[in-house]
Image (cartoon, rainbow, N blue to C red):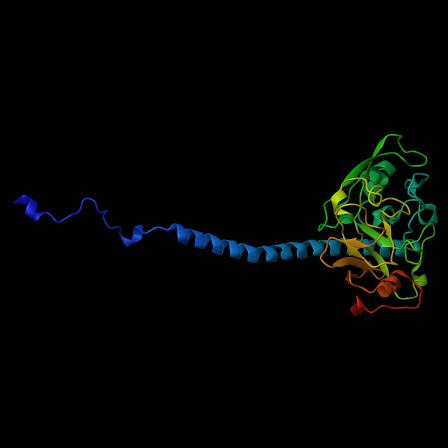
Length: 299
């Protein structure tokens, strides 16, 4: 009979799949996901470290250019830029030309503009200079170029209205008036008797990350300001990491780099200085003629 020739097939049993049709079970899928999660967790710190390394390199390059600008300023005028006069003094122009030395009321950030290829900013006048954010003045580990809007508090007023202030992530040494950058009077290299390679010039400044972009007491006047914690920091206390929450940078050097600030010295070299540096050694780095020379291995 015909039915005797047909194979014995159980209609309730599914046909066997070939090896190529085999799929993932739920357990296998969960195992794969877990493995991928572990791999990502292992790779993420490496990626973050690579990104921070690139940002730190850019910060180093910024400080190299700033250090070179200080050197070129000294070569042109016979002295370094000063720290300026006061926070409410606008950049000084005499007869249409930019004043230099003790006649310049703005701070070191404004004074180095001709030496960082920013002549157009200087020539545009004080309002434009105060409000022009330059990437050179910002550490990429913390933020990109940033400005704040504030009422015109200059004496005499520049516009009498709201002004844009371009900010800055670097500060000069020091507020104790024992460093290279001092109030009113500029310093000559011959006065740096401790040695240019042993004397701190400009470095990362400490800022409260919670309030970036707001007008903080130490981050509101901007890079052009004369004698103000925006651009001058103390060396009586060692640097520290950027805080969060309340308060400001406490007039200290500091950064968003893990464990260090990047610093340019009076000879133009750039080296990291660790947060763990001894208080006494950091004070010596900030002074130009105390007779003490700190070895690089000590910081």
